[in-house]
Image (cartoon, rainbow, N blue to C red; front, side, top):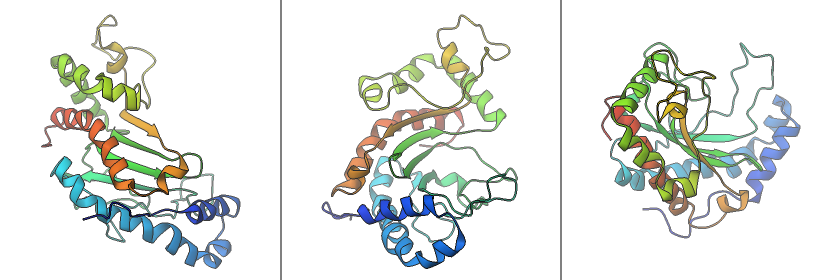
Length: 246
């Protein structure tokens, strides 16, 4: 069980990430790798391990995997093969708490899945970056077929969609959903539909900013679980749209 007073990240975590953002090269990283391990990677892995049991209580289908390779924590190395930006490292750290139905699917260098064998499923996520920390839940950049399924499910279940995304607790914590949307209604959908704003969405994600200091305080697991519990109705609804258990 996680310690209620456990502290994972510190001022040293954000000092390292600010330094990396200023000096994004292999020589600097090699010289500061002990700080990466002690201030960022190992604390994040401990946090993930401590989230595993509480997250299972939120949903037995969701996994916080503390494995050093292929687990919830994204690699800090960037895949620069197809990018004009050749900086070798991400100046941030992130972890995805994923649906167990995606277990065993090959993941890319940044923790994302490839197109071959990909299965869309909503996730819970945590992002650590100086001045830009946030947590989120939902479905990010799903495949077109998954978007079609979500839209169809929304039209057939409008009341449950509104309940999942417009409750007082949800809007107080997350406000409106984020992500990309079409500029025009999708083909075959009435422009006057009551949910047309949501039917135009290509992502179904809620997110909330976090102060850097909040990530350095005791009780971080409790803070994250409180936010994830509020996002759970959206994640549950999306699982239903994609025929996944929650």
